[in-house]
Length: 333
Image 1 (cartoon, rainbow, N blue to C red):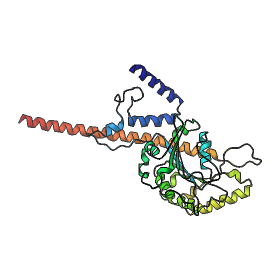
Image 2: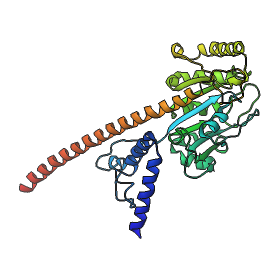
Image 3: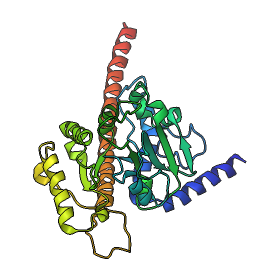
């Protein structure tokens, strides 16, 4: 019975692996090597293989290692009604996020792939993403943080967690928690930050500009900027005017202004009377690039961790030999 169960597990893992992209397979394999070791997939028994973390944490070695995440994290920020949720729904090919003119997203939603469609709320989300532990103390956040698990296999969704953030507005809008503080904290832990600017009035929102300025202090290399919903401005000269306004407002707040780009994007549609430039595939490419960089980074990290563990093992063995010789000399006396 145990043998047949192990065979079923191995077969299922083989089927899953065939459905994975090469990057997804590499990220998953690295994660498993840290967690369960090289033979984890082939053995049903949890004790059949030892992961890098167990080896590193052994009392004799005590090498400090951290398990790399098996997915890239991309956070989308921007003013309210900038099309953040609509982009997520388009990217994964499923309507998991509510969209509309009203300020729908007042909290943070983590959109991730999984085997079963599911929604997780506050405590479950913190348990699902253990690196969020530092946010649990933020007053009002627990009731406004969610995870949407989708079975979608669209694009490279299986390799990325997309974080939808609250729409930023000026004036009397009262958030149930400190939005700026949470976005800044999240920026330390994500691989990519996509900034969406709505061309219809809200793009120059002071709160959005303040957040962008704060993020540029330490995360300028993670930021990418887009003017979303470009199809809502049909006339070319009107679009250029909005682009110039946004660029002027951003120029004093961003660090890498020499490489600054602000492509226009909108959800693909067939009913446009006049063609409007659409760089939405550039957003997908930014996500793909982040995935490729994370694969390289995780492989390098694993190599360095293995080298440090190897060196520590040699050190412990050398120390043990010295102690054995000392003990032998004492016993002879």
